[in-house]
Amino acid sequence: MRSKSGFAPYLALIAAVFQLVLSQGAERGQPDRAPLDPLAYGLLLVGPLMILLHRKFPIPTAVATFLATYAFVWGGYPYGGVFFAPIAMLFLLVLHRHRLTAWILAGITDVVFIAYPWITSSPNRGLFHDLAVTSFILLFMIAAELVRIARERRAQQQRAAEEETRRQASEERLTMAQELHDVLAHNISLIHVQASTALHLIDDDPGQARTALATIKTASKEVLGEMRSVLNVLREGAPRSPTAGLDRLDELIERSGMEVTLKRVGSRPLPPSVERAAYRIVQESLTNAARHAPGSAVTVRLEYAARELVIRVTDTGATKPAVLSESGSGNGIPGMRERASALGGTLVAGPSDTGFQVEARLPLPEETS
Image 1 (tube, rainbow, N blue to C red):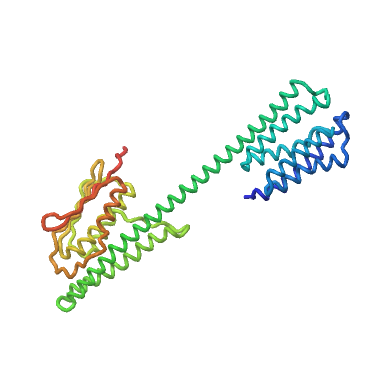
Image 2 (tube, rainbow, N blue to C red):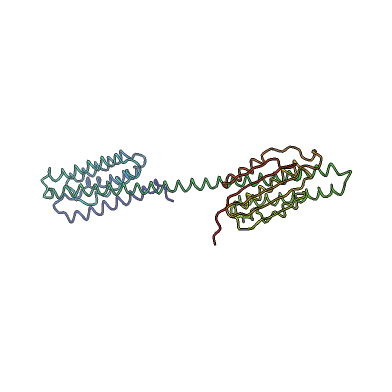
C-alpha cells in the first residue's frame, strides 16, 4: 500500500500538468482575458509546489496556494486550470483533519470570486453568477466531508476488525494454556501416583509395581502426544489434531490405573466446546481420585438430557496408604468450575458417603430435526 507521503509527488505532477495545459486551452477560448506570461506561469506552478510540501506545512502551503490563485484571477488571466490546485488543497485539508482551515479558505474564496466581477465591472456579474459560485464551493466542501466520513468509518471498521482478531487470538491462547494445564496436571499426577505405588510395592509386590511402571510409560507417551496436538495449533499451516472428546473416555479410563465404571444414559451430538469441557472435567476428577483416594472404585456417569449434559464422577474413598496421595496444587476443582461456568453451567464437588463426588451440569442447545 502506497504511503500518503509517497502520493504527494504524483498529485503535484498531475496538478502542474492540468493547470498548465488547461490554462493554455482556456487562453485560446477567452480572448478577452490577459494572455499567459511568465508571471502567470509562475503563479500556476505555485499550487503544485505547495501540494508537494503540504504534508510538512499544511496550513502555510494552503494559504500560499489560494493567494496565488487569487493573484492569477485578479491579474486577468484565463479561468480554468488554475482551480485544480486549490480544489486538491481543500480535499487534503479536510482529509488531514484541518477542516476549520478548509472551511475558512472556502468562505474567503467564495467572497473573492463573488466580489471580483463586481469590482472589475465584468459582464459575468449578477445573482446567477454569485449563486453558482457559492453552490459549487458548498457542494464541493460537502463532497470532501462525505469522503472524510467514509474514510474514517472504514478506518474505524478496520480497527474494530483488528481488535476482534486480537481478542480471538487472546481467547485461543487462553484456551490452549488451559488445555496444556489440564493435560500436564492429569498425566503428571498419574505418573506421580503410579511412581509412588511402584516405589512402595517394588519389594513386596513386584508384579503390581511392574503394572504401575507400565502405566507411567503409557501416561508419559500420552502427555507427549496431547502436548504435540495442542502446540501444533501455534504453527501456521499445521494441521489441527482432533481435540479431546468423550469418544476417548475409554482410553482415559484405561490408562488411569484405577477401577473405573463408565455409565452412559442416552446419547446425542454435542457441541465441540461441551465435548472438550466434559472430557477435561472427567479427566481432572479421575486425577483427584487417584491423588486423594488411591485404591478407590470410581463411577463415571454421563446423562444426555434434552437441555443439559450431567456428569457425575464418584469415588468410594481411599483404600490404600495415604503416602500415595500427596497434596497437589489445589487448582483442580476451581479449574473444573471455570470450565462449566464458561459454558453457562454449574459444578458442585464435595463428600459423598465415604468418598467424594463431582457433579457438573453443562447446558446443551435444542436438538434440530
